[in-house]
Length: 212
Image (tube, rainbow, N blue to C red):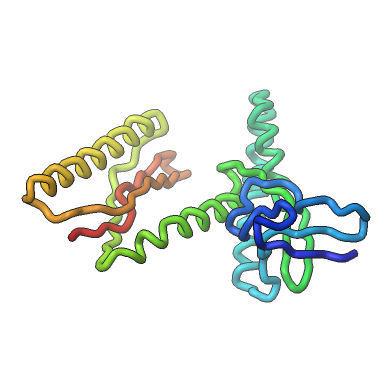
């Protein structure tokens, strides 16, 4: 069997670089004969043991979680989520190797999939990196709030978003009045679940900020 790796999205309907293959199924244009397969992206270096070990760990954790979640969905007869968990269970199961690299042809795109979340994280980092690199003196700030129960999580998120928007608007007005130097940056929300206390901890305002 022959393999052909395609990186440019302009060729053979390619999907682009490795970080841009999230959510696509298939290895590309199907060959006329059954002896050749077109591979998209850069794949994973099989010689990079650190990357391979991290991938194997994410895969093991994902499968373990999905097996448990499938049972819960089945007990509750929630077939919509059962189908999603089933899809995640088999995410990136099949691998094709070529020239010392590993490729896959299926991404489930589910938020509960640690494999796809790693790709999503890489996409976000790549999109934010040029902005941060353009800052002369960026600062990384992390703010946290008191943990809450599940029923209070939505309210807490709304409060955090409102606080951040108020802060941004206040600095913008001060800058327009000539009383404050220009302030801009990136921010995001992160939630960590504590399985022992059954609480959610929200980190907010995590990001890089530049003033001046």
